[in-house]
Image (tube, rainbow, N blue to C red; front, side):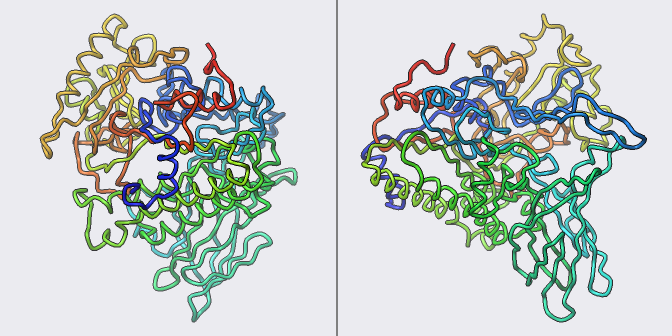
Length: 598
């Protein structure tokens, strides 16, 4: 695109400053990659190896970057359990964030939407959390759909699907909340609302709390406060947006995941606490780390236009906020993460690849240039930033970076199935291959298992809850499995499916937290990625299958095939060839050396 003149501002940076590939993390997963950048350490040092980790003592999986700890003491009164003190949300990333060095030197620091930084570290002058920030349910985002035909979605949708029981043009709906923290037996909180359907026109009125919303078919609401009543006159607050997809013949009303309300967040999302509120003075905004609703299009609820419209809303919020921050910037460090390119590329990449197994020329043809257009939009943001630096006398350094590249995801590889077929894993019930989180594994006859998007673990004695492999045999078993994986050829393409297998012991030089990680990290060939089923601990019937889902592009492959990029408006004082080296290069621009500290 640069050679075609489509990215003039990035071209200007490349010609006057620096432009190079940027080595990504092992594995090239976003929480790992951004943790590499933040700390200058590899996964062995910062302790983030995947989106999903497991507790070897219980074999229960958990999200890698954040831990929620319940209140230490409670008072039980019948069916009520009153917390005596608050719980805590803990950031699991280890290591020193590079901006802490700046803060100690008195350099103003603003870190906006840094991935893998929820809750905010609290060590920058101002922070807003980004990727990893949950919705109010505690996950990455659960939409709601109220419809007269819930069976049409089928499968296992990623949203809360509720049947709309319409009587005389009226129905009562509710938005799911988290479990009531004050009940002994868990019971979900609910926020009720009413919908009134016009008998003739495709129009509805929604009443929720003190809000009254009129929507025509195809309309989106603004952000609407959502309240969940709690005992002792308390309320849990969030917010959502409604989209009236269809009134007739089938009724379909979509609601975004209930986001944390930046005006009154139920969890910490900013440093100081009122920074989120300050940003919301320009309007409420998505606080969940993944605002683009990829589940809604993957489930068939959104079509391409609806998905792109929703993603554009989220992108506009972020861009508008950045423009205000940029206008106020005159010194220090300003970091801003724009995630719309990543999430939209995951969905729309297949439209650029006629060889993708799910490619449909009639459907995908109109969207061939969507990703290019987003790069051009990003280039506009770069231009605005360069203009601001010129207003400041040209004394600033601008760095534009991506944490990884991208590729078409054509084939899915199920590591657990490969382990089963090669005698390393045994299932309990061959008819229940869809059971999540390794619950269908016969641990007494299993030597190795996979969980997450890249990791393979040995079922090790004295480490795993039901480990059977003696530690003395671990090394030989890892070598044997590695050789087998590297020999695996995709019968559809006649090409190897896996190009690298990384041993934890040999790959990570920062070893303070290496024991958290998998024994092997699998580097899939370009175009191949772990199947969703195997990543969730299932054991599907086939090892290799076509990827026919809406999520058509990815980067969780051999890290050498998906490097990021680095631009700078001037030659950096300390060059950076990898994500791990970039933080030190940033600090060198402030005359700070010696990062990361020993």
